Amino acid sequence: MSEGELPGRPEAPGGTDFGRLEAALGEALLALGLGPQSAPGMRETPERTAKALDSFFSGLRTDPEVYLEETFPGGTGDPVVLRDIPLYSMCEHHLVPFVGRAHVGYVPDRRVLGLSEIAGVVEAYARRPQLQERLTAQVADLLFEPLGSKGSFVVIEAEQLCMTMRGAQKPGTLTVTRAARGVYAQDASLREEFTRLLGR
Ligand SMILES: [Zn+2]
Image (cartoon, rainbow, N blue to C red; front, side, top):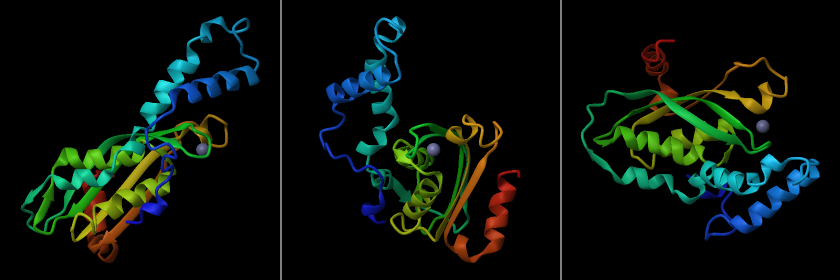
């Protein structure tokens, strides 16, 4: 995996600069015409929004590879598939959420990853400014060579609120992205089995 491709490597390694962020959010509200007189209910909003953003982007401080440390011997060559992992991420173009489900499969090669670790990998990549396509590829990449599996397959179905809220698409429209690595890239029958397991 190329770390250089990760979005939003923090420029301040110490984490979020809350003072700066709250001041900027206060300025943004003023630019929208929302000040203490016109919007008294929003007095605490810069502080609350700064905390929310820090939480939405907490993955910037998580190295997803830490989840690969908890593996145990096993794996018979049969795929392991986790479906319907809840997914919350933020589009890096508008800082608006995209929300949906991730389905993740891999074929172990004598090394099995805990199921909660798979969900942890998805979350570590999702809690950053993201693009759905890149998120899908990053999870698939990590669960292939760094994990030492025979292959991985990731399908993400998500509603891009920056599209549906602005009326470019009907609400509820799902964007589906897929990334296949290793045996999943080579073997269509493995991908078909994965789709069957999803009940689609
Ligand atoms: Zn967007």
